[in-house]
Amino acid sequence: MKHAVLIGFYALLLSESFSLMAASSNTITIRYCIDPDWAPYESLINEQHVGLSRQYLSLIEQNANLSFTLVPTSNWQQTLEYIQTNKCDLIPMLNSTLNRKGFLDFTKVLFRAPNALYGHYNQPLIGHLANINQQSVAVVTGYRLHRYLLENYPEINIVEVENEAQGLEKVQNKEIDFYLGSFHGANKYIKDNALNNLRIVGISELEDKLRIGVSKSLSDMVPILNQAISQITVAEHAQVFSYLKEINTTQVKDYSMAIKSASAFSAVIICLLFGYWRSVNNASILEAKNKALQLAHQQLDDKNKQLADLAIRDSLTRLYNRGHLSECIQQQIKLKERYNKDACLLILDIDDFKQINDQFGHKIGDDVLQYFAMQLTECARNTDIVARWGGEEFVILCPETNIDEAKIIAKRFQQCLFETSSDDLPCVTCSIGIAPLRESKSADQWFIAADNAMYQAKELGKDTIFTIDNA
Image 1 (tube, helix red, strand yellow):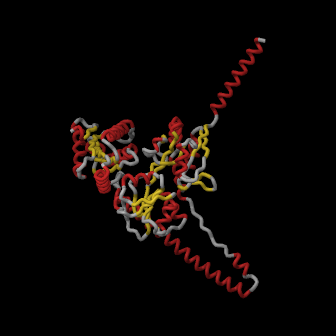
Image 2: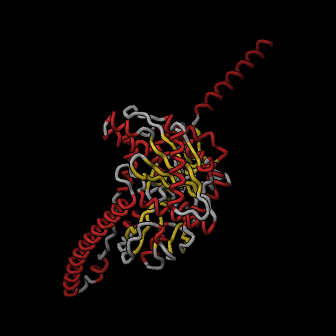
């Protein structure tokens, strides 16, 4: 009897052990929601998830023991509602904002893309949002760009729309002046729907840095997702990016019913066939002209984008240049005067940069500047404006940031610079000066204060942070 009990006991233990092993090998299933109207990034077509985010989720499923299950939503607002009420666990592609960090944790960046300002062809080039005065700008409700306009450009007449398509159609029909949205998404909709009267009239300083947002209840999944993202190869990223180049199809009218209905009378048939041939011939000519016009518009758009980009970017580092930074500084001063909003200016100067040029040559010096700029961009927040002032001197403009928050940003960058290095480049440090925006300060006074703080940091031994409050 005792032997039978022992045998049963060991059998139960063995059964539970196998159950645990089986459970540990099971794939983890995660529910997710998307923006159903944001092609080509993500959308729902015939209740199926398509777009860049679907491509990336497939790669992540291959790299991790995960399975993703779609929870459909009807619009972006419902998606945000579902993630906050635990009806889904993550959103695969969105920007990180302070508001969203209240209910989401974010992975590393999956995909970067610019945002652009679209207008009718009879609208002049704007270049920058600061040049809009009392004109109407459409933006999707709940998007990060919506909050950004409300906080930074209160003088703009903001028109809320449900999705990108609605905003672009309103501009096409001249109901509003401009639409602000994602470059790839808007361009795809314009091309698919032949909105030939639209063009890019400006570039937003706010770049999309798209990540996976995970519900706070599953925050332990973030390291697993980051590991899977790190395993995505350059070739796989390129394959996903090629999704943006998909070929669009057009519909051809069916004239067969008209021909069949006229088959009773041969004379009428001949007339109809002749008229049909002429209409097809005219349609072919018109189609060729439309294609040529569309190509010309596309080429003009590309040139406009290049010109707009060249006007605000530094040619070596691709950071914003001095002229664009000056406009942004003036905008912050206006916000300070009107709404008393905080802002800080950080000036960063690479230590002993002349020695690098003398010892390694100017080519390596340029490589160091480009690497330094890349690290700055990685460490900066989405709302920060990173620029090259000149030489080895860089500037970060931090809107809605007090002096303590600015110190954290500066320390984070110095730590990042210390922890990451390139085997092909000499290690560098930098001195950082910080100045908060005070009332009645001009742009020159604000910049001089931050510049003086930077030189104080140099005198304290370099690789140092000095704030104007210490002076």
